[in-house]
Length: 322
Image (tube, rainbow, N blue to C red; front, side, top):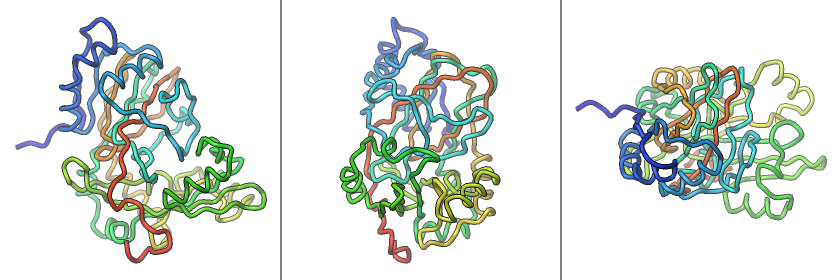
């Protein structure tokens, strides 16, 4: 029996308004999402952030608040945001949203308010197929030790107050303690964090193993070399806004980053955006990316169905024994 397509397309043009159309197609959309990992609701008709929020509710998606984001967003409503602010001429590589958090979104909803004039697809890749295709010697150290994310919150990148949605250091302290994040406040006001997570997780519904991490995407080697060199000169070797390593601290090599991205490329699929479309993504099973584009592009996003994956949070200082 052939494996299900990693992206299903459902025609949802019939109905009086986006929320009503979503409610009418909820069972089919949820079934397609469970089967394939991503489903495009073509022609659902969303035009505003309010429409997107109503569609999420109609699809029975439990919206959640984003914390620890890696790039700025515009907040439209408490649970509807813009896509990450990222240069239009640069790709956003494959990743799983907030895969480094203790509580992760199980479902992502993207609503196309303005379709780009050229390219700009939100593409997806099945992480089960990616895991099966990755070289075993690449996967092994991450499967054994997990992966480590190091962040430095300063005047480059997302400020800690924006990432944690608070201006109170005590609230950040409490959040980090609860989420298994090692953190330190530096004398100049910067916040340094380290967190260790599993790189391969079991899907909560199927039990299938999934390559679930941002090892390649958030590695410092993915930054423009000139920018990386400048930041290193100014802030020191530990001053990059984000960087990744194996869970035991072993650096991630360029060959590893390239190898992961090459496998993602093999399994990448996507449909051109049309205004009014809604894309649902199973964030555990399916990675997503964004192509470069030209012209206006406005995608509203809802992070939903929060879940705490068993064993996902690992002790930072115990990299040899996940």
